[in-house]
Length: 182
Image 1: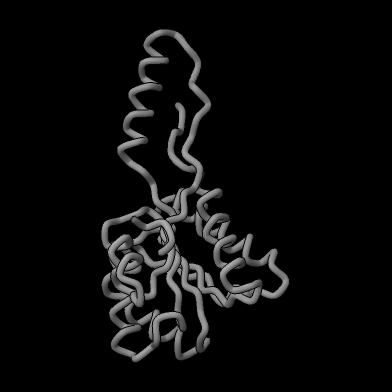
Image 2: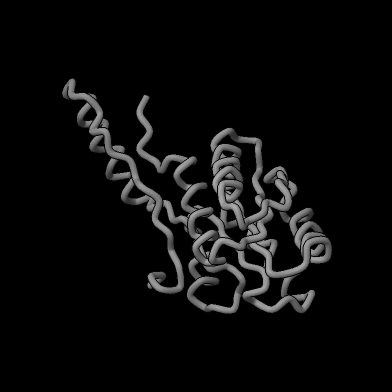
């Protein structure tokens, strides 16, 4: 088999690198995942490991919530993290849908955007809307361009059907931020 998608480790490292740069090496981070799938856990552990390499940064907690329980558990967890760790705080997630459940308790709790910064992955429409709108807590998503990946799958199939080796290409992480969201 051949993987044309982004390397989960590279995605996690890209998230961490952005956080380290944005915080000027002083990030306090809660890393979240849903470890039902190895790819998700691998992304999150790569984020955690890279943050731990930063001498002035701190991983406060590693949290995993099953996908089916995210809507119920994330709001309470986010509120608890803000109370327990204070702000400023970065919260990472392996998928943007998690941020869908993290924003409402921040808003309801009166937490100012910029005090808690959400860094996710996948490139969901809701993530783009939050990033584009500003003041919505989420500043970054590591977008996965599914249409481009679809074209690449066809190319790889054509190579295989003609006895050629895989191209060796895979998508590198692409960070969508307020500067390039449009």
